[in-house]
Image 1 (cartoon, one colour):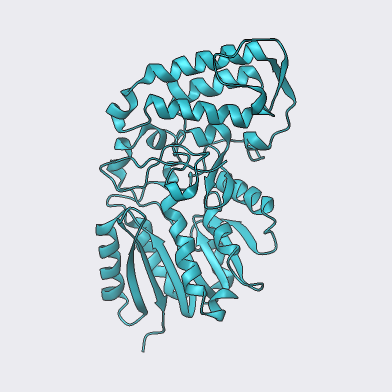
Image 2 (cartoon, helix red, strand yellow):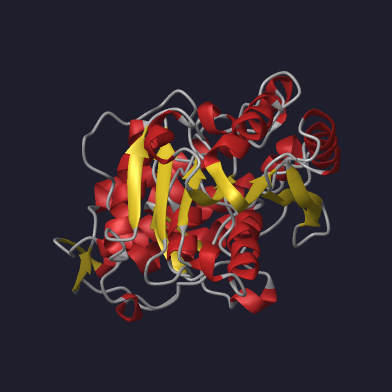
Length: 372
């Protein structure tokens, strides 16, 4: 299962994607992204297990599954360009591809379930969820615009398959560059490669896991998030990739869980909320209605948490420590660099703005040095 993504235009430069699956990463086609309700936060103490990881304990006859597919295909086709026209959402062709991916995740052996038009029969098909649940999930996808990633419970990011659920931000392909930036910083610096890093606002744990896999044998990562649902999902993902000894997930707001490592970090990264508050209502329904507002809303101009990071990063990093922050685009990048240069003159060096895959100025990076 590999990603495929479609970039959507928006008044904000928040990276927005449609869905994901079966295309090679080099084609820039990844499972597109859409997200789930802001208000709907799960209360379960256990993470949602991705559909493709569940045991095939259910079954339906071939004809029953075909009936569901016909219904789901018809529902998807009925969308036409309605979502595109309303908020640049998914068109019917993408929804039909998502339906195919859903079948592949739900059916134990999807090769037994051939394309539409094949003669029906009543042989049993083993499923990872009930047929009733499949009807409900697809209605949620179309009628509620629930993100596909929340439907199947996972997102493909870099070479990872990460557990995501309502209450957890879906990681975007642009954010993969944070790991690439860190890889470049540590490639020729043993102190950074073997040091202690922090990922603030970790969400699914995507950045922390990506960094944890490129650090040296002594390198470690602390991943923090205020949301208990995000902490639960990140912990699940860390354990799934066997990185419990390298990555520690802590719950708390920004720097609060890091008091014991103040001044000891080799690096600090974050993809904080950076969307201006009054832009949230204009996002795609999959994002604005469903993804956690806590992970999106950056205050009046989107800069609240970016400035908070800048105000504390010098007290957290060791001399020579590295930082990388994701922003909403060119203006926020320039404002952030100006803020660091004016308010923290002499505290940082090699402060740079880095563009994302689409050429949009997206990241601010630099190194900490003690003021002379």
